[in-house]
Length: 363
Image (cartoon, rainbow, N blue to C red; front, side):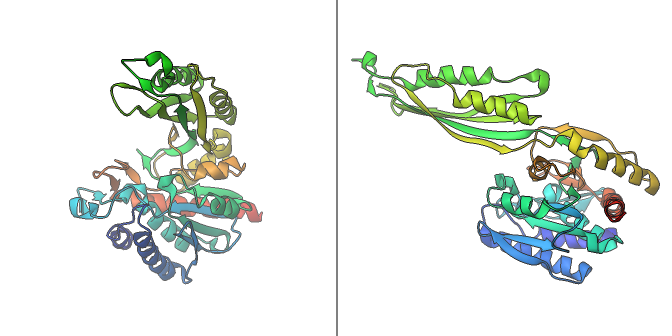
C-alpha cells in the first residue's frame, strides 16, 4: 500500500496548487481526478466555486462525507526549493502535510471500504483562504450526511476533537487632518482612536474560556507632520463556543469612538463557527474502538485554535471528526513533512471508521 500511496502522493505534490493560482488548481484537480478514477472506477462530478475546482467523488447524498482541499499556501516555485523526497521515514514537499497526504488517504480508504455506496469525498480549493466561495457547497453537501470526517493533518497523530471558531474584523477609522505643528487641535486624530480601540478590543479576551482577541495589522497616517485622518486595524478572534463568538462580535460592533470627531466602521465578522467537542465525541469514541480492533496505537484527541472546513459542518449540528489525515508537522512551512509509516495506519483507521458509521446508518 505504501508504494502505491507514495506514487500517488508524488504526483499531487509535484503539481503545485497555491490558493491564488486558478490554473494551477485546475491542473491539480486533473491529477486528483485521474488518481480517484483509477481506484474508484468512476470520475468525480466536477464543478467550480469562485472559479476554483470542486470535485465530488461517490454518491450525491452519502451517509459519510469525507472533506479535503487541494489548495496550499505555497507559491509556484516552492517545489524547486523543497522537492518531493522521502528521507528516514518522512516524506517532504510543498503541501504534503496540509493536506495532500489526506487526499491520497481518502481515495485509498474509499477504495478499500465495504461501504462504497455510503461514502463520498468532497474536495474544494479555497480552504486556505477561509473557504469564501466553497462554504455553501460544503454545507449543502454535508446537510444530509450522518457524519463528516475531515482529512486535515495532525501533530503526533492526535485527532481534532474541538476547533475554535474564527472571526476576523477590520476597524476603519475616519477623522480629520490638520497640521501637526501649527494647529493639531483642529484635527481628529485617528492614531489616538486606533491606540485606544486596540486596548479596548484586547480587553474582550477571556482566557478562562479560551477566547482570544488579537489585534494584528495596524495602519495610520501618511506623513509625520500631519494629524492622521484615516487608520485601520485587523483583529483575529478565536472562541470555543458560539456564545463567546457572539459576545465578542456584539461588543466589537458596539465599540464607541474614543476620540471626538473620529468615526469607526466595522468590517468582517464571524467566519467559522466552532467545532465543539460535543459534535465529535461519539465519532472519536468510535474511532478509538476501530483503532483498538485494528491493533493500531491508542488515539488521543486535541483542542486546537485553527479552523477548518469541519467547523462549517459542525456549525450545522452534523457530527464531525477532524485530523484524520497526515501525521507529521510543519504546516505552512517549507519544512513540512508526513510520517510514511502512518500512511497505511491512518488509511486503515479511516476505512474501518467509514464502514462502522455506514453500518450504523443502515442499521
